[in-house]
Length: 89
Image 1 (spheres, helix red, strand yellow):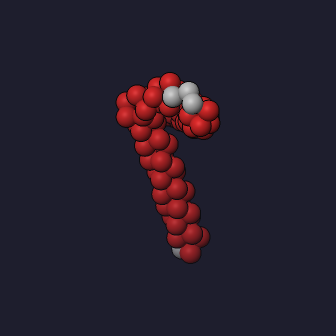
Image 2 (cartoon, rainbow, N blue to C red):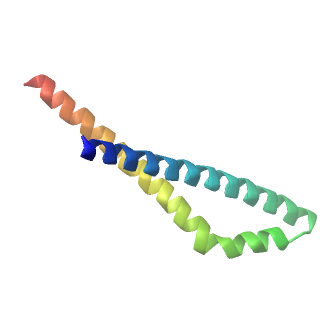
């Protein structure tokens, strides 16, 4: 019972982290669009700031997002595969 509860708490924490990660990536994408728009106007400070954030923050956040999507897809595929094998037996 305690192991099940700790797994549930861990799952909730991971889900919350990934949800926050998603919204940060969306915010940074909107900030990038804003920076591109401001560059057309002639203000380069926003794009320069975004370029400084790119390697240390944006790339790892996008990598975590893609990795979690792949793990989720593989996990659901395996569950479906195992459930179909159980039904065949």
